[in-house]
Length: 115
Image 1: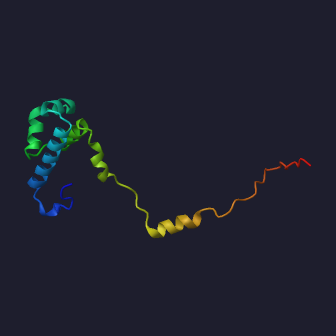
Image 2 (image 1 turned 60 degrees about the vertical axis):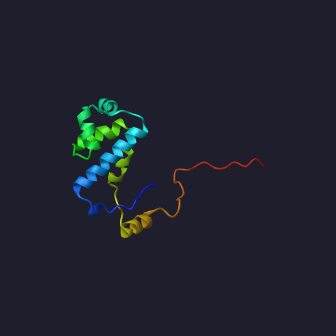
Image 3 (image 1 turned 135 degrees about the vertical axis):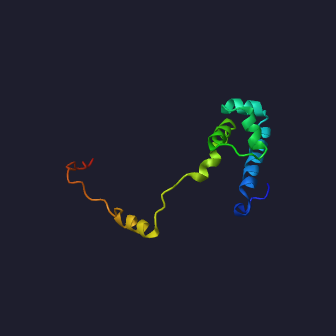
């Protein structure tokens, strides 16, 4: 496994685009697909595939189409916004939980003994 501690802030936009392109190319080759095949699956032209793999910028829409064609959309999970509950709010919710069950007022059934 390569260096996973990349300081993204120290990289230029061009360097980040180049890294994305390298990742796309690596994944395409691992799947044994040609640029033309991925482009066809993605609904883009091969030139666009060549552009990203050579570190040139492409549209976000094209990148999503490429990731979909390579079955890699799960890498976008990092962008999922989740609601964060503060510790104070969590404590309030815990306090509101029921502590006991109450007797059902409509429960008129009596347990019959077999004796």
